[in-house]
Length: 476
Picture 1: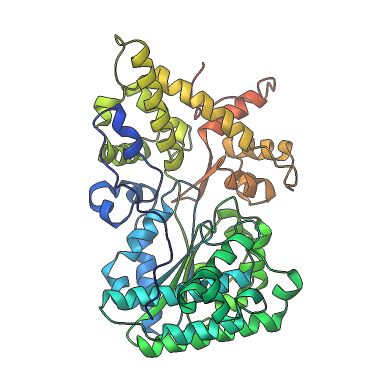
Picture 2: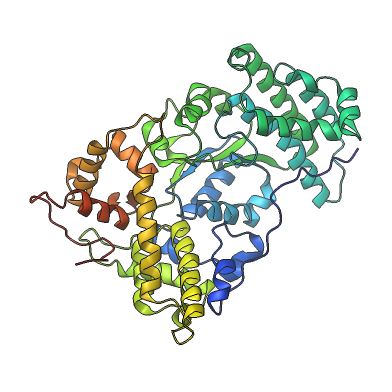
């Protein structure tokens, strides 16, 4: 029986280059570029500035590891807005990967419960997506994947301790309508997404996890026999997002690292910068040499002057998506670049908001210019600065370094104190909150321009602190 495709992301309209204010929202969506958009909108400028060859290095390591009969276990890490997802999409579109690998994608935000998932959820999701991924691969070759029914039979037995209600295939078919083979996968994935972690005593039982891993290995053997010319590559996306508690990452990638490390699968996961820094080779499931950083793009130099090359790279990227010289006044564009700190997600969001401010201003005063002016951007940036300040705070149940410890770390990095480069809890938190940036080359840390403004606010009465530049320059 043919298994229908699990509802994935809705197909969004493609990006279109903006010729005026009205086109900015569609041109600067924050979602990663997809294959149909790469040729027109991808810019090599960021790679050239932050450190070239990273994507090709991952590709070559994957292919070489497969040729040598080993299994690649790698991680991509970097701050939000550096373009990690787009780089992974480009990697998977590379012909060298397509010729050798069947790709099994997992999305921690869309397919797991990001607040409660366990390693068992990850393994079951790998199992389900393996079936679907192989089916899609065979469909592209105009072949049927008859092995799916065998794999689903095995899957049903091993998920019983976690989802007893899915044990009876006939009942599954009756309650959902249609074939039980079809609906078991659908119900399993819905249960993983909605329910999250099962009872702790069940999930933590090593024998239960061992059975789940053994079943997954059996199905890997089935696939290898069916597709002998291909390797299986699991790509775990969005495990780096702040919505996922550190404790869940520790359970999955440290406490039960062996479960992932021993699977006869190639793996590439996105993980947070602080998490990757905090664990050595013996603890985390990924070797140090297979951890690839996607660095920040600097808008300021170590001397707190404008980084011409970094800003030029951002402008080259923006010009792909809009007629920026016609839509933005020069000083407005300069402030947008400074305020972004090289974070593409924040930059795109501020462009869209500034465009709306400009549109509303023009509607109220038709004699004013119908383009983004400095005042429009200043309104947006001041609002973003307030959001940035609030994000440095903490939630009611969050354990973290004190604000004073973070403030002193920010100051030490800003003043280029060598001791500030040694990672510790305040630095980990500031990296996660994007207040501290990390650049290629010399391994330089830098303070985000918005965080520089917060430094100025907090240390305004400290006569030993001197502003050296590198902020938003909204005031003298």
